[in-house]
Image (cartoon, rainbow, N blue to C red; front, side, top):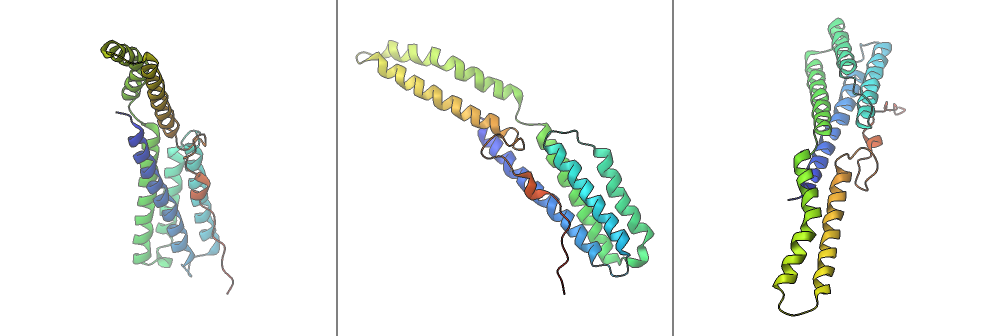
Length: 202
């Protein structure tokens, strides 16, 4: 009945998408870093584009406006740089970069879509109504059907049951937005930030 299981699945799916996001950024960066014929200034430009994409995306997950046009513009700039420097990039490396950029864009769009469209509001409202209505139906029914025994036992069980239902609902409510750093199981977005990898000394 509760959507808490769905929220956990959404969280796991988002973690997978964020892993694809970060690994794609790193893969694109490494592909350009291995191009000996490409100028360092152009490699640095690609790195700045990747950092800007990462910044816009992470900020959007933290609640700011998602500027999709700027992200697409940065990806288009990388494609344009590849087109203008074909002599420095082999076909094999170019195909890898294109595939990683496609994975990058797809992971971002899917993550934003999951964040925007959470659990159905109607289903959550139904759960909340059930929680509040449940004691008024459950308690009188049990008290009426009891032939003997203390009524306080029924009331105690109803209170405990209601407390459990409300607690589960609150957990689910916190997990609706796993990026706000309010719930205990929220996702640490800092782990998925793109940072320029330092060159290891020879």
